[in-house]
Length: 297
Image 1: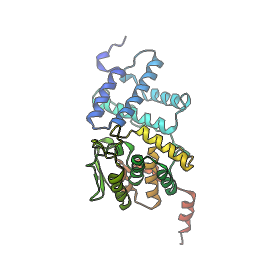
Image 2: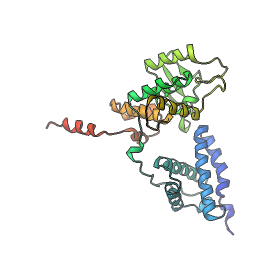
Image 3: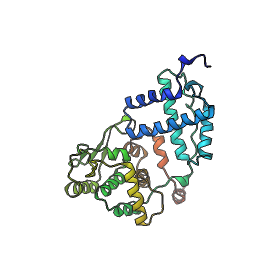
Image 4: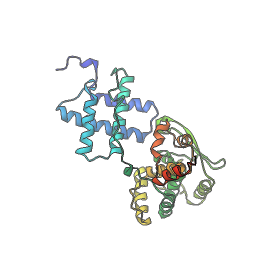
């Protein structure tokens, strides 16, 4: 029997504390749900492994290493998925440290899994256009176009209200994006024209304040967006595994190819650091060849 039960919390008792902390930080509902799914999965794994409830201060980096091995080898999770779960756990332990439940975050310097280049899928300009044109649903057609032309996260696009899209001055105001941050994203002239067309001819008559609204629900779900994208890819003959996030990824990759400064891309995407943006800096062998051919000492 543990002698210092009052000094710590059981992991399953700490999860509601974590949920409240995330909510107070203004984190989006979608991100919160993802974090809680990952933490609950870790809790089930730890409980099963220990054959008893686990205290938060008993968890070490070694436990997480074993969890990562379980995810990769037994569950067949891809590196990107594993890293997402590590990030969720790291944020959880950060919360526990802030709440004085732990003195240190055991994942402070925990290394992420290397993501193979082959897993970093992005689309060419022609592929993006083909997918958008293959979407017959009027609302989802303009939704995908907005993601592709602004780099917004799917949750940010879903949560846009009529007040957030300023078609007169040509910008989109993202309110309470990832990490509770706001940012302003300018629209290209083409997107501005297309969204005016959407409001005039294609947005269904509804009392919903969401900019992208279905007549039946008054909103759009990320599951529906991804299903429509999958169907559009099939119709357009594109075999890549395309999700809504790939549109955001492709937006950034295209700007990199156009020699846009990484700090500008960082601001547009709403990343807290340039390090996060660097995953979009794809280097093609032809780019390397062109680079060395410019040397003319």
